[in-house]
Image 1 (cartoon, rainbow over the protein chains, first blue to last red):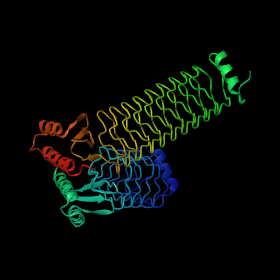
Image 2: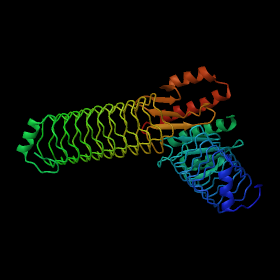
Image 3: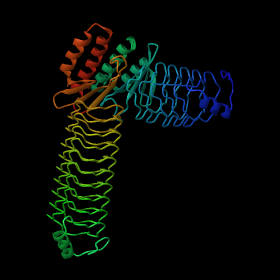
Image 4: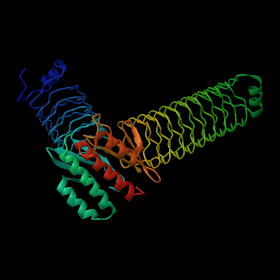
Amino acid sequence: MHIEGNLITQDQLEEIIAMAKPCNLKGARLYGANLAGANLEGANLEGVNLKGVNLCGADLEGAYLKDANLEGVNLKDANLEGVNLKDANLAWVNLDWVNLAGANLTGANLEGVNLKGVNLEGAKGIMSLSIPGMSSRGDILYVVNHAGCLMVKFGYFYGNREEFEQHVQENYGSGKQGILYAAVIQLLHVWGTARE
Amino acid sequence: MHIEGNLITQVQLEEIIAMAKPCNLKGARLYGANLAGANLKDANLEGANLKDANLEGANLKDANLKGAYLKDANLEGANLKDAYLKGARLYGVNLCGAYLKDANLEGANLTGANLEGANLEGANLEGANLCAAYLKGANLAGVNLKDANLEGAYLKDANLEGVNLKDANLEGVNLKGVNLKDAYLKGVNLEGAYLHDANLEGAYLYGANLEGAKGIMSLSIPGMSSRGDILYVVRHVRRVMIKFGDFYGDREEFEQHVQNKYGTTSEQGILYAGVIQLLHVWEKLAPSM
């Protein structure tokens, strides 16, 4: 069956997933599909538009999701260990307590993403800093590397490094917190210019 | 005498204990009974109702207390070594200074229990409920607390060396000065916990949630370690202690370690210099953080 660019039915989809391991759904149009609890281990979902797809509890371990669009998708209880999400759109995705250990998040869009309790151990392309004193709410600072341009997610803030610097300057100036932020920004700068 | 489910008098009870060794008090209704200092070694107290009973200093070694109801009972200084307390209901119980070495408390409910100075070494508390339990100075070395709920528990000066806290809930718990050496903390929830002066040497923290935790900084920076290790920095009174992969030491030792490994001019050396600068600033500027 040739998938790429084709709109496939739920029945066809289930058949493909059941038959081929790992399955190749590259470029498939899956709008509205129900993939809750599906075994998609190592699947190729490159460039797939998964917006509106139900992926709750799906096993996506080691799947290839480069350039995939996951905007607003609920990934609750999904297994994303070692998944490749390079340049994927994860805007407004629910990643509550998801395991992203060893995942590649280089260039991924994390705008509005809830990363509470997410395991990012060994993840690539993303830095996470949890530093008491930076935020009264205990927010974690996430930095995604977009080919040298850093995108920062910190509480409600989402923007590039320059915007983050501006945001910090406006909020903390040169006080004690300002000095702490200056060291953080310096570290971001070093990381942004280094190779992983 | 048939005991099961019967309400017996204090005199009858003393008679049973004195006569039968080990005594069988399975399912007996013993609420409010005075069993202080009683020798109940190997006794069968399965499902017994011991609410408000006084068991102070009692010998319950190897006793079977499976599913027993011990709400607000006084077990201060009792010997419960190797006792079987699976699923026992121990809400608000006083276990101050009790000896619970190798006891089985799997799934037991110890909500609000007082375990100050108790010795629980090697005990099994898997899935136990220890919400708001008072564990000041308790010895929890080698205890299995997998999936246990310790929300609101008080653990100051407790010994948690080698404890298994896999997937346990320690949200908001005060772990000041707690010894967590070689503790297994995989997937533990330490959200908002207080970790000043805690010893994390050799602890395994994979997937631990430290969101909003105080006294601990965690840095996950790709490029720092090929294994994807996270750098943990715990604030102590006059210094910070760093845990990074197999390394555990203070900032000066970490600087030396990094310098020896990466030098100062390599890409990694420069990245570590940025990290060390951040540690330095955090250490100096925020003693209360």
